[in-house]
Length: 144
Image (cartoon, rainbow, N blue to C red):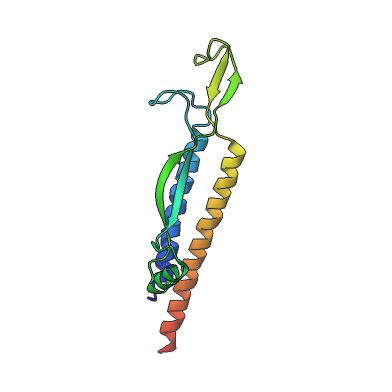
């Protein structure tokens, strides 16, 4: 286990959570977008995380953690397949023949909760990096 593996692990978390915050911000910005280049309303996007370890058994995962390649990676960004909202607004240019408009499947409250969770995870990774940095500094001071 290297001296900087904890910093590397937390750094991967910072990168992943930053991307997650960007995707959540994009969802919030498009909460009322009824037309996209793909056609239809905007669909909520979700970030998919996976551990950087590749083993599946406990022994493989445990030995890989001792060898270092810890952390998280972003597997991809997927579209949420939950149903779109229908809002009655016959004056809207995208309204169907019955006066309903298909709106994005975005719930602002859920997005804000996700944003708060991502922010807290980001802050926790920053705290972990600062703690590792302080421990390394204290270890170097022992030799003085």
